[in-house]
Image (cartoon, rainbow, N blue to C red; front, side):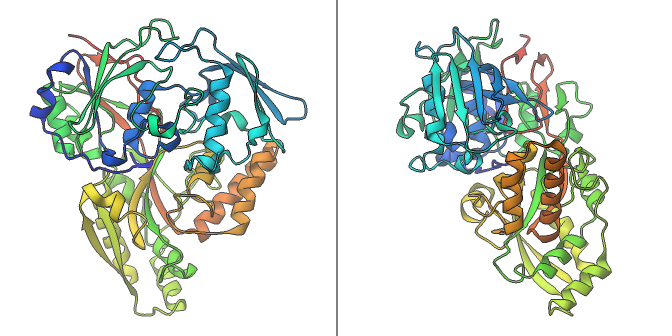
Length: 506
């Protein structure tokens, strides 16, 4: 799901007949994404904003460090790492014998270039704020297979922080212009046909892949179908091998279908949002924002919108079942308190707001409609505005005061920074809180685990109480494999897709 970003669905819903009419891809495994990138699509990891960007970039590139299903750092191109006694220099030892798709050996220079490019303001990557602790002068190649990163302050979780979705390793000297359409990485698949005008993306097996015996599949035919009914029909007809993400309605349809195998992620990661922009009336009044949150029956959202495939959320990006959550219970619904807050804010007779949404992600419209019903008893009249899905991310998202969205799961430090700090490019609520910003900065350099957890919990509490984002539920992302296919499990972070072991019987 969304960005992201859960972004742009500019690619129209693809029909099954179109999917089948591609002779060049006849031997390929057919993989269906749910959210297309359209004209914004890019092979450049520095601008990996859309789910569709992630689909294709995960085929072609590797990261220095990746994240496992528990959101902990795990080796990838870096086979090991260590930190100096003063905690300021992290040293990464690279795998040897790794080559890019053009035959060039991977060296430390490529890693140094990747990270310096990401933090260079001239590049303009939205991932730059996530790496603000890095100094270009401190990123050096010790030798051909060793990289050191020295920071001004201790960064206790640096390996985790450098494992975000923007940090796939590109070649030394690769330009934004070239990377827009041409990804030359070290990953399991190589770009073969890349024709966006004809909606054809074919990726062939990398015969020199550094992980022995992988990938299993010879070829991947990547498509996007934005309509869930068409996705379900494709898997039932045997004309698709893998749907990367299935909504609750699709899972209900396919539950007992012998043609399909739903495969859930290890846990809830991504979350749904209703975003209020805090610099626009009436949401610039904290009492209104709090009232808007108090009307939500969070378990009802899980039961209806997600059909039980998730857990309630508490209006911050850390799920309440996470050990670092500031509370493990669910915020209660309180209609009377919501009414009182609205009256204090000058709305004794209630308010009327427009909630913009679209079929741009599973459950968006249904969540808006259910919120409309939940808010009514508090005197909040919600006009649900259903926008066209194909232009939602370009014309509506973040351009209206109240709108639907959803976000991929992330590690705790990344989740708290990515869309909630004042300077975040995707600060949906246009929210600014000095105490919160200071906490996010401080927790990165705090070496005492107990103190860092306290900071994390306080940061969540601030978002919940003061922020402009309603987060009613976290969802369990579920993929669907055609019967006879195996080797793919969705990651709790929908920005991570591992196709290395995907295979299908004839």
